[in-house]
Length: 464
Image 1 (cartoon, rainbow, N blue to C red):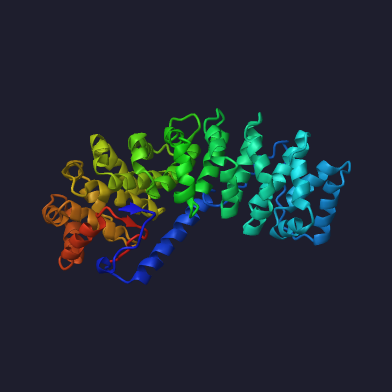
Image 2: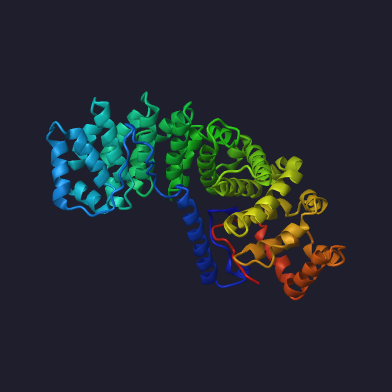
């Protein structure tokens, strides 16, 4: 089943109430959004490091009056000698939501700010850009519309000589595109996809990361499958994204994270998955997952690695069910992939359970009707690793049971009841009595249902 898009499941296949499924899905979505927001992925970006002039950024936490904001606006508007100082103060004030709303209500305020943004004085231009960044970071969708006149200039400056200024413009564009379809439509007409394609080939890692971030904001849109993803494929951006799924890349893991989320949104849309397969996304995803598994086992990974595992596993799982022969591209690496998945499920079971669920879902797609993967699980003695997951709730037990159904799991449990290891023996007996004695048909039926190659927008979250 392709996860992330598609029609709902039929009522005859449901094993619990629709509202319960939706409620649990929303709960997991909240957990995922929180995890990603902490790493500045789904939320708009406000990179404090892009100060440009070595100044320390004072984070304002106090309130501001309309008169104070008006005075700053008048100082930047009338070309006084202290315009740069006024811009610095305005930059700090615009961290406050109420100040943002006050500023954009002043007549011609955005036009004046854009005029300074296009100034031939680099210091003034940079500080005006930082003011635009603060406005673009607002959670008020109306402010992104007010900033719409800045988009042609932002796109123009993407081809400038300063990598830091280009990076700043990319974050502004990504923030503006995040919540407003009108902004995205205008950006498409203005050639944003072609501009991002050029930025993704930049020799500067920070520019590439910012370009992938900006693209990911476009790709999350509800109209992406109809308007944006076809343009991305036509512009041939995906080979650049796939190439950057590499831990050894000179651009580092954060760039790989941004590119992985872009690819996740593209593949989940179901638009031309064959194209992605032909561009070796499966091979690159497999190599990356194996490398991440080995890195975690060696204890050399950095914080946030789960935000790379999740979209890569989702891409691979969706590609496997979208294309029959796709699984054969993973089979030569079956043992290494399974080791990596077992490492991920154990490592993130408590801290990031959504990663464990995603890896189990990928495991289900790999083992469904595939003797090679099922045999490899037994050969690598990974059954005990997955046995420990069945008592957990939150959907993990369901997916673990489906994995056993794929592998004739009840027979496996019966055999494990005679294992020489007493602890494994006791656990197998408990699981057989607790979960399978009366509910084996249900697990087997769920296995048949969940392995259908259908579009499925909700996670089926069931606790036995």
